[in-house]
Amino acid sequence: MIEVKSKKPLLEAIQNGEQNIKVTDPKFLLACLVAEECDNDKSNVKKFLHVILGSKNVFDMQDRPQIRIGIVNEKGKVRWLFINLSICSMALGIIDILNDTYAKIKVEKDERGNLTGNVEIV
Image (tube, rainbow, N blue to C red; front, side, top):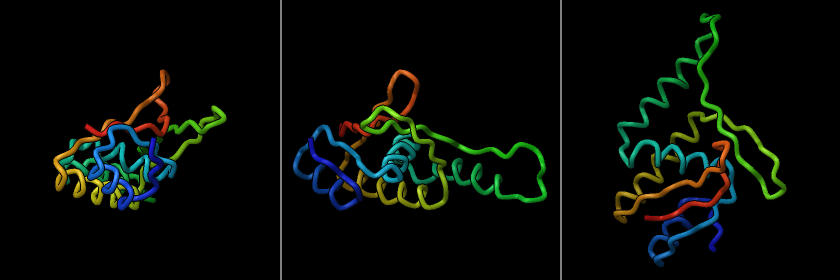
């Protein structure tokens, strides 16, 4: 299984016909999840951006919407990360790669919905 941390190794893995990869960078893994959830359509990333930008309103004293995702490390501990603007921009780059190579990805989750780091290329 090939380890991937960024867009260039992802592109190389797809071009080499890899079907299963291990994403080791947590932020890149979240970007892969956003790309999967958006079904390789850049216009669908707007829904994440609306939630993120809506949560930055300092005058809104109600609970701010945030998208928090758990990522399981090798030791079995869960690390919580939030989807932010930079992750959405990484997802746009991943969507470009997937559309150019006619590929899709599936991010593996454990029984609690936490990301494991394993990604299947379809």
